[in-house]
Length: 277
Ligand SMILES: C[S@@+](CC[C@H](N)C(=O)[O-])C[C@H]1O[C@@H](n2cnc3c(N)ncnc32)[C@H](O)[C@@H]1O
Image (cartoon, rainbow, N blue to C red; front, side):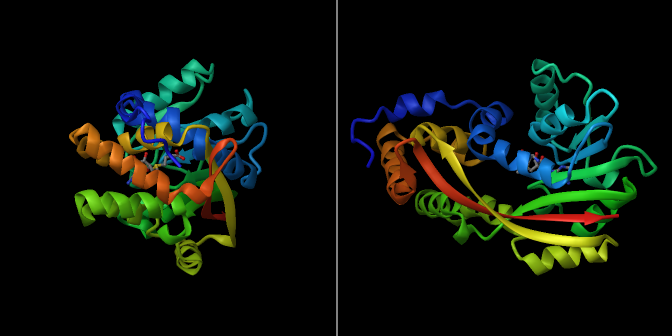
């Protein structure tokens, strides 16, 4: 239960915008641990040349960079300029200034010849407008025998955090607010994912269902930070304090079964696909 006197306005003020909020809230709560699993699934090791597609703030690239060492190579690419700029900043802050960052579409991947041992893509493929062409471009970036690892969320209904937030936001702002969650889960079928990889020419395709808990010690802080990343942030900022408090209270109620002594602990389900060129 969330106490009626919770300082919602203060909680909302904690949030910041775009890549900073993504890095501050979403990465520690879930994306960071999913990134570790992705990199492990790719068996990324010393000397590997690795491409992180749709790199966002670079959480996957940073984890991989630590494993490839000085003889390896790390490239991150994303079409969102703010994300790429932030990715470079976060990497530099962690002493990982050797990562190459490119702003661009997946269909214009850096390099005109196969040059990567591993291509990684965490929660990106579902957003690509031309998925078959994107998968072919990712395959073309791999050397023969190179490996691909990608992840795509399962259905919204299987991810309580998404389901509760989508329901509550739709109730306040209308059906358009559900669209972002639906887009996140728009490649949730295991066989659709496999077919996409097969059509792109990949071999040894394996699709695993992975389940991990998203965790955060302060649910309201997480919700404020998380929602500020997306278009919902603008709408929420324009609400009265009373309405905003009531809305966050509804979200917290919806997630009541997913809290323990350490705060939020809510399962998330994703497919993680591995394949070889
Ligand atoms: C959910 S985020 C995942 C970011 C990152 N992989 C991570 O694990 O945190 C999806 C990312 O895909 C990027 N993206 C979407 N469509 C893209 C495209 N056509 N080409 C390149 N990047 C794209 C977005 O800018 C966004 O950063």
